[in-house]
Image (cartoon, rainbow, N blue to C red; front, side):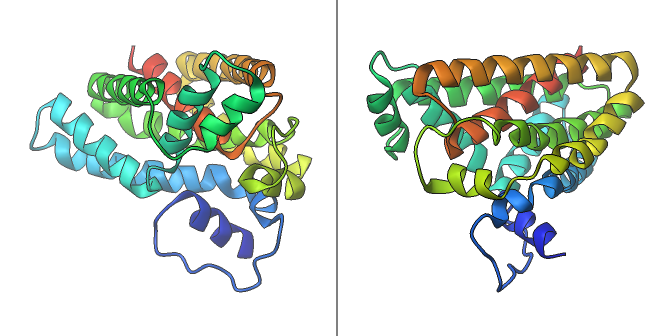
Length: 240
C-alpha cells in the first residue's frame, strides 16, 4: 500500500500517512493509483453535493461542492493551470515561457484561466441531473487524474522538478490498469460517457501537441493543467 499512500499524499490533503521509505521516482510508480485517488475525491465531493442539494439551489450547491473539491486537492491543479496560462500564452521564446511558469506570481492570463475554469465547472455542476451527478463527478475526477499518465511519457521541458521525478518512475503497465476505473464509469454512463471519454482523449492529445510546440515538453504545471481541462470538459459534456 506504499504507492497508494504516496498517491493520496501527492494529490490530496487527506490525512494519509506518508511512507517513510519514499524514494526518487515513487511519484511515477504510484501513478496507477491516481484514478483511485480521483475516485475517492469524487466520492467525497458527490456526497456533499447530495447533502447541499437538500438545502440549497443548484447554483449554490454547485459552488459549495466545487469549493470542497478544490480544498481536497489543496488547489494543486489550479495552480498548475494558472502557471500554464501565464507562461504558455506569453508571446516569447520557450525559455522565457518556462521562467514565467516557474514564477509564483499570478499574471493576467493565469487569473483569466482560473476564473474561466471555475465558472465553467460551477455552471456544469449546477446543470447536472441529480440522479446521475455521483457517476459524472466520479468520472471527471478519476479521468482527469488518469490523463496525467500519458502525459508523463512525453519529453520533459526542463530537467528536475516534479515532472522529471514522475517520469522517471512511470511504468507503461499503469496506463492499462489505471484506466479501468474511468473506463468502467464511462461505460456505465452510456453513449454520453463514451463521448466524454473520447473527446477527453482528443483534448489530451491536442494539449500535449500545443505544450510541446510552446515549451518543448511537459512539466509538473502541465500535469495540473491537464487535470483541470479534462475534469472541466467531462463535466460540461455530461451536464448537457
